[in-house]
Amino acid sequence: MESITITIPKKLERKLGKLPKSELRRSMLDFLTLKVMELELENSKETQRGMLELLASKSRLTTKLAHKLSRKLELKMAGELKASGLA
Image 1: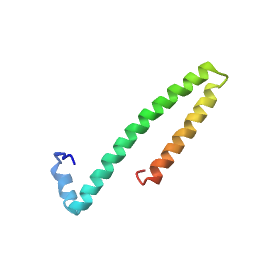
Image 2: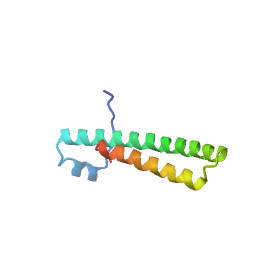
Image 3: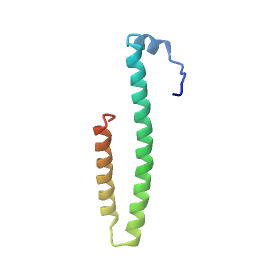
Image 4: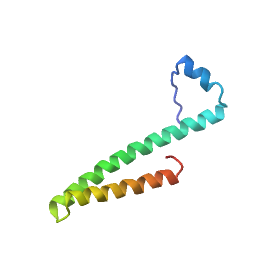
């Protein structure tokens, strides 16, 4: 496993000092995992939007319907994040 070193302001360090180290490590891992998933979701949303715009331009699919489909996909992905306990 990779190690990461960060500099923490003194005020925050005092507050974090009240947490057990194992809980702090777990919280940081959860935070980093969530951030990676957010980036993947954002990239996925951009890809979905591009695909829907392409479909809309090549078919009778309207932009309004394409956005509606995009929203449904976003909600589904958000549900998956929530089900995994990271949202």
